[in-house]
Length: 125
Image (cartoon, rainbow, N blue to C red; front, side, top):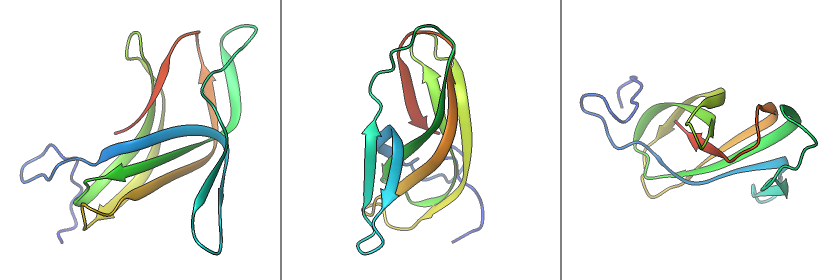
């Protein structure tokens, strides 16, 4: 395999990976015996007395499918009403050779600030 990074959109590009799940939680624990991840305290809603609000030490778990090639990935948090990108973390490189084998993304201890009330999406780019 060539040592080039494929965003999934360039010449000769394979399809970009498809996010099957992107979840924000308080903690992710990996079982040393079987390798399975346990997600603790999933964040579905944030209730705050005011904004902006800073969420300290949250974690992001993602599961990707349909990837073949070498990718440079980011995890992005986007405000849904205006698509403003409020947070990005660079994950580095992902190399995938089998589109039927899922890949996992785990990001620990993210300090995330939500600038205003509303809906936010977590995406892999």
